[in-house]
Length: 121
Image (cartoon, rainbow, N blue to C red; front, top):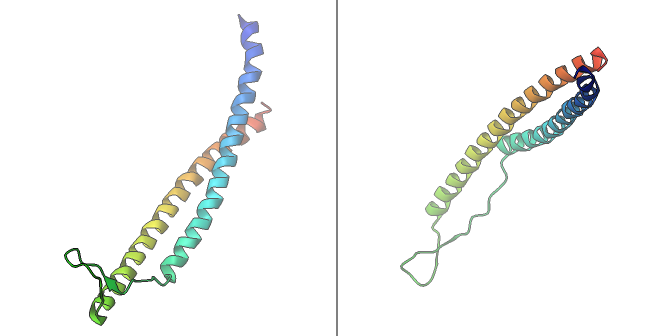
């Protein structure tokens, strides 16, 4: 019985070490992608992109669309700018949270992997 465990253990150790290495590699790759997303979202937050607003109002009761007045256009532009700012803040926050989670997964698995490699297994 002890002989079976001794021969099965190296395969389990190899599979576990490969698992740890793959989790480290994937979480590192995801972290790099999230850093790029975080930079892009931060730039959208700091320097919003100009929006195109259709200067025509489509009313459900009328057959033909009518042009927007200056007041309607101004209100619509402010709404669009506010929505874009809110979305940029939310996306930046999401990217930062996911980056923290991914970094935690990476560092915990890296610590396990280094302890296994350091032991000689």
